[in-house]
Figure: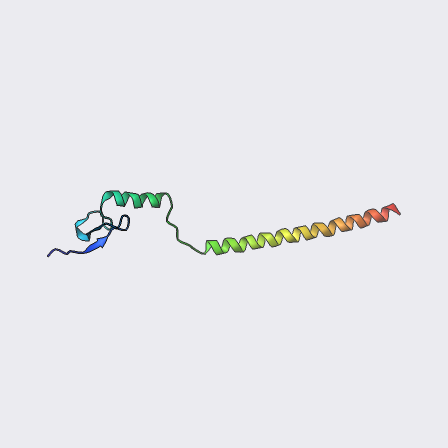
Length: 88
């Protein structure tokens, strides 16, 4: 018994008999190789938690930078105060 299942190639959308193609789920070797090339080039991406963690890390870096700027302002004010005392 032969199964006749018509499907569309995920690469070129050509309709073909699924069980007759040795390159399943693709219709031909060319479509299979095009898809493989996309994998090698890392064109296919799955969104993950890294994006969220990266944003969180950027916020931490910005907060650290703001704290360092604030500390530098405090120390510069203190140095100015010491200079004023030495002038009198």
